[in-house]
Length: 452
View 1 (cartoon, rainbow, N blue to C red):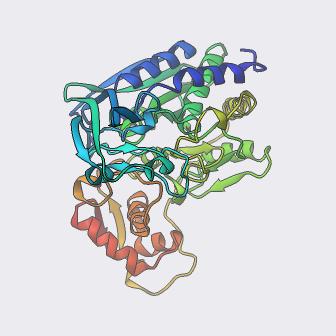
View 2 (cartoon, rainbow, N blue to C red):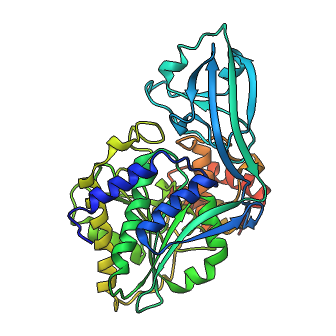
């Protein structure tokens, strides 16, 4: 492949995929995977049935949408067909005339970004909703009625789609590359990474590689959990290095989120390539938020590093309609493509490098305090994250940031492989008593075990 024009090809493919509606499941995901598959020439599309139990989760019904809009005085004022961000993902069907007061309870906008349409999801609790920019929302007449129409369907006999590419090398040991496909018309998060990986697969398919490449295109969280549930034994047996790719097309400097203990071969390789760049950022695992959570979870323990440019949540276009085709360009996409080539080439070059097994993956307490919390160890009871929403421990509508209690709760789960309350409190800079209180809540829900 001619790397001089690969960025233009990637951008053209992003433009083609941009209008397609994607979510956890549905025809839009399959259509997108078929396009990515044609680019790579290698992809298998795997289907996992709705209702299937995957660790602590259940694959949801397949969701598809034909149309959705809000009308006032016979005129469409919000139209899904013009921008699929207008509809809350996994909205129920509805067809009725309602008051402004009732409508307003189902509307989402961003006051601080009044020209942007937010990206909102409600995958696991039945509701309906529309998203619009705040400037349009405040113009709505409070004394008029509104026709709301959503032609959506939930198929309990449907399935969740995952794209898998396996490029065999001389060794069965694998480099895992994964990304997400569940975001609708958002470019940096998440079209850039899937398209870059599809072209990367095409590039390495024509080379004599030492290590096998496993490239995954997953709906975030549930997709990773589903794939790990089926393939954990193989993934663990053949793991050489792993990287989750997200938010990979903007002008930000290259960055990474370390694996859970920041001491893996994946970490070392990523840092070697990052050091060739300027103004890099290395985030601790506590800043996680994508599928690195599942790979690094106790019981899975695959030290996957996340590679990004501007980290998710840290740029103004994140999860809103400003994350459009203007956020990237062929030059930036070429840079990102070449960055990943360097990562893989270095791993192949270091094929004989000895990988020392980790002896002690426990967190260290920088200042030992004589406390009962130094002796209380935490053990997570699930593989991958538990389904917190069904226990009313986590919100059902998507938001960009965790509360402090949620942050503590997730880190208790992530580091629940024998670390103490004190050591977890130390690493997340929280008080041991507070961490212990939340730990007791998780223990009550049988999600962790506390042991002296």
